[in-house]
Length: 258
Ligand SMILES: [Zn+2]
Ligand SMILES: [Zn+2]
Image 1 (spheres, rainbow, N blue to C red):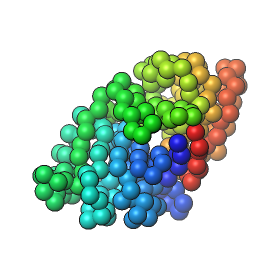
Image 2: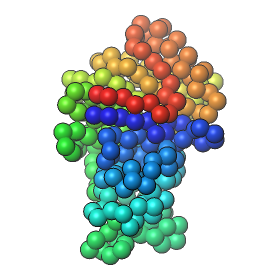
Image 3: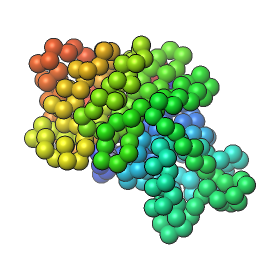
């Protein structure tokens, strides 16, 4: 299983790209601006898109992606997401006003995209990779994913603040090698983190303490310019809790093989 980080920032500007994780050649998780770095051929090879939630930084390039490969694909791209997320996409994006309804184009019999509702706890196995949806706690309905391949397991939190459900979901399984978890703000923005339903280092590390696994931890979704401060605050807080895991901030472009 090859995981490439196409986008991992809480914003854009210069080299920064918003959330998109590419799994092998055929799957992406979220469709933020990072997907725009793929070639047309790479975009046309995508078969499945798993969404964590409908915020703009996670779906902004979904309409453009679909339009770009409209005439290149023979089978619809499957968009896996919560029923609430699908409803929101239909109502607010693919509504013929912001963008055409590509689930009915070029015809209802042979559309270019197909929405596939998925619920927390559900798993889908695609060519030996099992993708499980796990609930989180965000300001809109949101989920993370645990992905198990033949040789390793990673999990991605999506956007969330303090919760038990994501950590219980990971603890229910017996392996976790790599954890990609959001930490949008520094501890100076503790109150903002709570209001915006994101993590800051103190909230995140209190939750990592709930995890029975000791994976490599990669921070994502940092506010632009705050990456180093956030990473150092996470490391310091984990040390205080006597939790010894390697922690790094994702910068984009990383490739993991697992
Ligand atoms: Zn969000
Ligand atoms: Zn976000």
